[in-house]
Image (tube, rainbow, N blue to C red; front, side, top):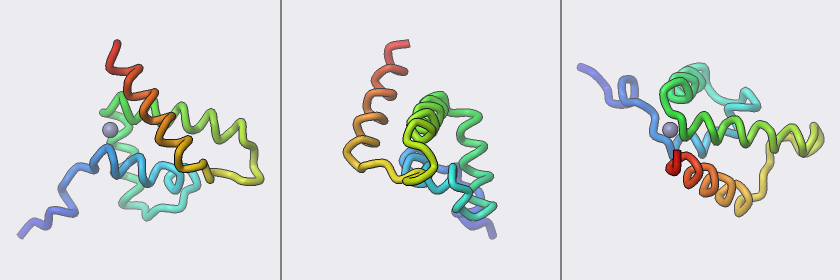
Length: 86
Ligand SMILES: [Zn+2]
């Protein structure tokens, strides 16, 4: 019988939570696949992914992907509000 975890689509919040790990390649192949597929179908998360990636590049290699928590939330909030306008 089918198990929910194998078939359920990944949730946007789940994507945001794992995004930094995803960019570091620090997620399981299965999770990476699910996030990748979600990004292909979700414009919100694609915008967040692109935005976060730019920020990460600005920060440079040293601290890599560790964004301050408040900052990420503001960034997500901003991006989400932006995409709602279009
Ligand atoms: Zn999404």
